[in-house]
Image (tube, rainbow, N blue to C red; front, side, top):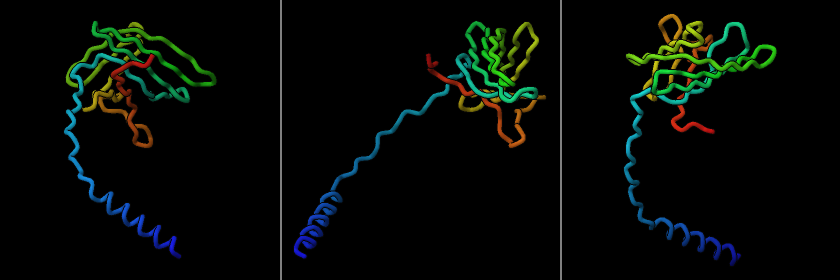
Length: 141
């Protein structure tokens, strides 16, 4: 019984000692700035009518060229490297690949990602989800 009283007294002393800590306010963090340009590396999923899944890794270069690596899953995985050009105006990125045989349009969102557009509006699947290519500010090697 004496041990229980001693243990209870020690725990009360511990709680009282901890409650006397002075809390300092957290320092202000600088705001995160989203670059105004669209140059960089993007990765994500795109809609696919004749396949199970389509993933795209896309580099937009400062000279207006683009390189996209497209991975398509049907019965097997097919990987294609596509090259072309892009233009950026009014938050819209228009990509032309493989001698104009493939045309993609994206709307840039407020955090710098690219949402796929179809028929002039942001594409949404049957569940209401957007097809978004996420921008990576430091490309992983």
